[in-house]
Length: 159
Ligand SMILES: CC(C)(COP(=O)(O)OP(=O)(O)OC[C@H]1O[C@@H](n2cnc3c(N)ncnc32)[C@H](O)[C@@H]1OP(=O)(O)O)[C@@H](O)C(=O)NCCC(=O)NCCS
Image (cartoon, rainbow, N blue to C red; front, side, top):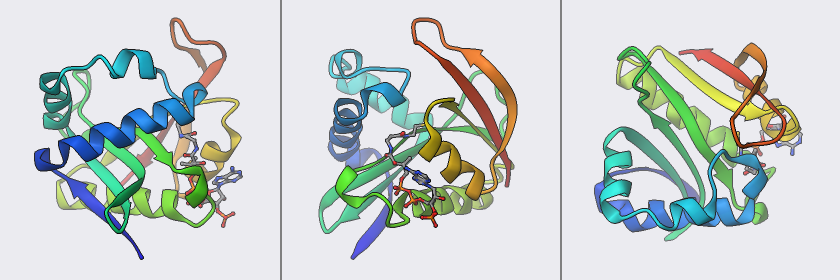
C-alpha cells in the first residue's frame, strides 16, 4: 500500500535520499545534478525545505517517489513551482505521479495557492503527457536553460 506523506523537517533525511536517488537515476530530466546536490549541507537542505512543501510516495517506509512545491522570489504569495517530480522506475505507470500531483493540488487549495507552474524539457514526452492529463496548460514554448541542452516548456495549472 503506497501512501503520500507531506514531509516536514523531521523527514529531512528521507527527502534528501529520495531527491539524490532521482538525480542519480534520471539525470537528464532535471536542471540540477547529483554532483551539485550531494554537496549541499544540511543547512542548505533545510533552507530549501523551509521554502517548500515536499510530497513523498512511501511503500511502507521506503520512499518511491517525490515532488515539491517551492516558492520563487519572483512569484506572488499565491503561486508555487512544482519541481523535483520523480517516481522510482519500478513504480512507474501505476498512477503514483498522478497521485503526487493530486496531493500537491489539494495542498495548494488548503493553503490559498491558486497557481502552480512547472518547467519540463521538450523531449520529456511522458512527463508532458502526465502534466497535460492533470490539467496543466503550456504557456511558453521553446525556452532554454543556461548550461543545459535542448528546449523546455513552461506549464501552468490554475488551482
Ligand atoms: C514522469 C513520471 C514522474 C511519471 O510518473 P508515473 O507514476 O509513471 O506516472 P503515472 O502512472 O501517474 O501516469 C499518469 C498519466 O501520465 C501519462 N504518462 C506518464 N508517464 C508516461 C510515459 N512515459 N509515456 C506516456 N504517457 C505517460 C499517461 O497519460 C498516464 O496515464 P495513463 O496511464 O492513464 O495513460 C516518471 O516517469 C518519472 O519519474 N520520470 C523520470 C523523472 C522525470 O522525468 N520527472 C519530470 C521532470 S519535469
